Image (cartoon, rainbow, N blue to C red; front, side, top):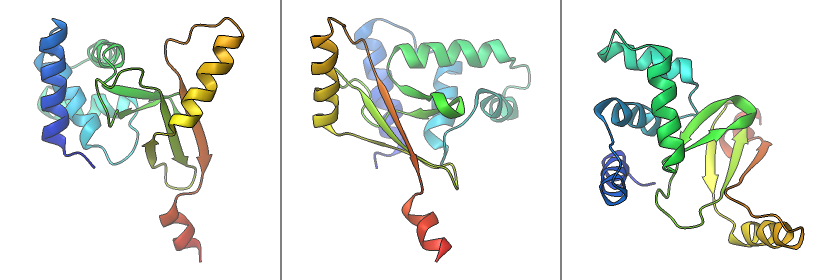
Length: 149
């Protein structure tokens, strides 16, 4: 897995190239998400952010999340209303597939180009232009499967 410093540096470079600002608060929210072992909710993010910025309010987190989502640095896990760091920020035509463990809550991003291609083709056949997609697959991760036996 790519380390935290590499992801932060990649985000900084992409923001510079795109002419957008990765403010200190946006960077801190991104860092919290990157460091999280699981998908993290906005309010859990706020709790962690308040450890270093006691004045932080929900709009602070939501504005940062909107920015991070728009730049493709994080993905929203719709089914759990939480967020994870994208493992390939800046990848062109990036569509994500998420494996979500219903036992422990772990979320892993994976890439199946054939799945993305098939979805793009079906959308195209229907006259639909895809801007992005997130496929969520729920089940039980390997660690939880081992723990049950």
